[in-house]
Image (cartoon, rainbow, N blue to C red):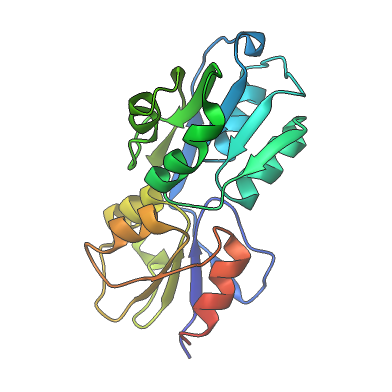
Length: 214
């Protein structure tokens, strides 16, 4: 019987999943005074982990604009209370959604070193005063070939970087079936296969979708 692999740094609590981390997150050093900003935009929970890594003093009532529930939950765990969770999980659509809400606000965007969407530039084009800080980067974790999923496996990918790093480690078999957590991840997968895209940007939703492919 085919098995489901979760290609992500965040493991699933579902024991039927095989967790396969192909990336390592490296947090970058920076200094920052959140009192200088009205709003913070984040597309990953790693944005908030980067704040903790750099011992940045939290501004609890700062308005947070998060993409997806996992990102919003990370903001709450970090100590923020005013959190807007986006309805759209694609970077460009996310930017269009929150631009009207950011008018007149000095905005901070904590981002990865390598990004697929041009969210920051779209915000600027919409007249938003936004400062971007590269807070973290995803680097490839080199794995033994014996960890390569066998033919007919169902693979869940939680980010575009995990797709790239999976390919660097193992390449791609035509018999693989794939589930993408969002549109930007699906775009990266489209180079190799026709993935299913989760309606919600959550690992649990991806797992349920993957089970329909078994």
